[in-house]
Length: 439
Image 1 (cartoon, helix red, strand yellow):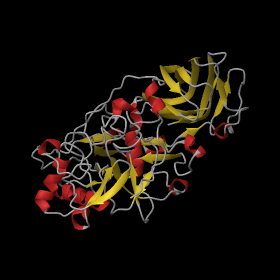
Image 2 (spheres, helix red, strand yellow):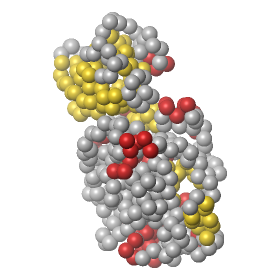
Image 3 (cartoon, helix red, strand yellow):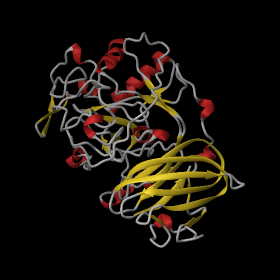
Image 4 (tube, one colour):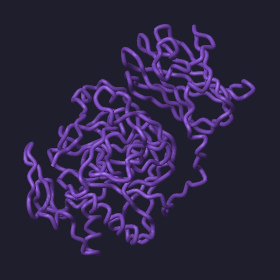
């Protein structure tokens, strides 16, 4: 058993170097139509949208997280990882035998060395000891990909809804907070690892009950730490290079399945970091959560979905821009990081850039990649103008900007926008932004 996750977050994350933004979220609970409530699987609605999957900073280490734009339709995902108690209901009703039951147990971890231990299955803790009923609110572990799929199939039959494992793109989009993302670069739901997840520095080398740490912007728990989570996709290191832009579902075949999220025994894994395991693999730090595209009881938001056309990002390659001290300069090279054409602000703040769009658009998000030194707090004002040049909306926000990191600002009810003026009102000694996208 070998974990391919090799990118880990340094303990420097604990040193208070990051800006804290109070979180807010809306949790949508969707009850399964035939559940009695004892082992309710709570789901969170994730509104569709466009996001940058992967991370440009990983170019310096791996190419397997190459950043690219992905458009997703709306879906639901589990508020928490599936627990031992929820999995027990599946076993009791079906008599299903897991891969560990049939093939010699599961991998357990003693210190740094894994060991395949006979008799270990989903009823056991990370060391292979039987759990007490008091621990059945922990995430289920020692589960293979095939076991997780079998649970989803059973839950679908039981509820009349189509449950499945999330795709890798859905998992990352949900972990990053969807269209409500605050741009946290490392862990899901915050900037302080100890607040959002169980990992090697705070777990005591064991799993913990689900939902105890701080949730992310969508109200989803434990997407960083506690247990790694199976995704539906086959794994291909270079898949991002040819991935379709809309609802990617992974390669058509492969040898291993995608695993995301990190677990209780390691350093806290970066949100975008990709891992994989053979579908038969199982160990004491591997579990899953479910997803669905079916409208679920308790929430319906289908009428709010934006058109696919409006979700396609408009880069500054495709619109003209004017800058303070650099009037009416075309920005076609900005996405390549050309210093002469990228937007440079700071030092003499406030400075501004005006983006003139190709026709009026409905705007709900602007994102950009920081290309700056030193990192620090950036305050920005956004002004929106219609076709006639009239100011119709303003918003001010602040961001902790770090070189290579993507930040985003989200908006509501911005319709028929033709021009956007973005002003940096406070920044470090100097700062530049080299990729700007309008959604």
